[in-house]
Image (cartoon, rainbow, N blue to C red):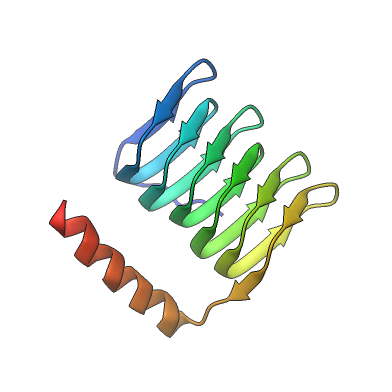
Length: 128
């Protein structure tokens, strides 16, 4: 599901709390709490103890903790058995394991829609 990246990994530990928006490249692993939106040109992993209250945009997204917000996973979204997602989904591929919780609406994207969204994100990312 997750490809090796030449970029650095970012790790938010169990006892960490971040308030504000995050942007970056590579892999973001969250085991603490994030309040704010996340835009990654790479993958996001929410561990069992991880909590995100905000929207997430990434290449792939694995949810083992709790996410309250809307999600765009350009390639794949997976909510594992202890994961909880309360929000709407836009993705190319989605897996919701048994006993996982998902409450919201889902929209499956075409490759063209994904490319269009990526172009828009790049415009915003370059401005920062």
